Image (tube, rainbow, N blue to C red; front, side, top):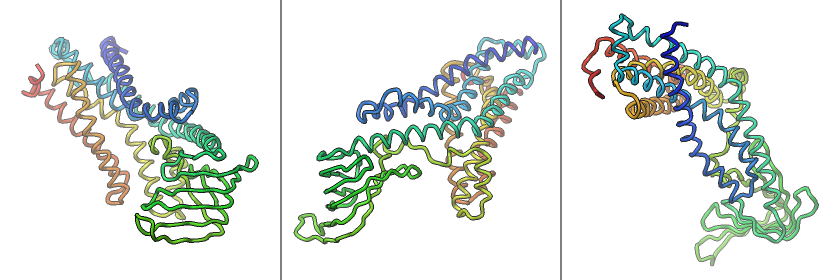
Length: 373
């Protein structure tokens, strides 16, 4: 590796690490309040929450790496331009494309690494996260159901029972206020059994020999009464833990092989197969985002001729546009308006075209190069 290449890569690595730390911190803070709620209001161990946070980091890192590479390329090239080093290199006959080569190489290496990461480490981390989260659900469901104490763990229900029999979740003489509808209805049952559904992340309460009283007006002068031999309530406990924001969907636990098999399974409904196809193509498209971010960040940094705050503002603007396009493209793919492979590569294509135009402007020393001075 030539001295010039090593020098440019060193200029790139520092801002890259800074960008990773900055964006990781920003996105972790978005989840941190929900995680702290588990500790202070739900009685979950800080150690358990710490493991949850570690399992969240891979999914957050996969999103922040493209942001960090864009910021790093902008700041590195902006610093060279600001200190007139870029001008000196051009005077020596070194083109901007040649200067971009080592950073583009690093971007390509990061994309290959992220391609592997999104298909192996990411689903494993999501799977581990869900297992830990489910253990919290089971523990809280067991602890929450105490005899002759109102259970308030579920947003839509207020529960009370007189007695618990054994350790299998058999309950006696239950009273339940169902707040999911207005006016609220009142359910009583002689027996109930608590069943934890691991796949659906729900706590089911199977009731026997009871009555449902449903007021027909707000005053309560009129109501309907329905007797039942068996009745099931689905208590979505994940809503009690961060409003579902901390929940991980099953599709995110699948690796590339799992997604490909699900996409080819003709027994699956078209909508489900489309969801698997969107997930598969989105992971691959996001894996190549660092390379395209580098290719647009280098000429933008050269044009701005300033690092620091200008680089951060520029990177945030470009990333905002990129992720807005990615969200829209995902919507088009999920609705079936565009093939998933085409829709999810539109943001990368935009970055490639914008980068090519920025390279042309920087190479021609256009008037754009005077902004930011």
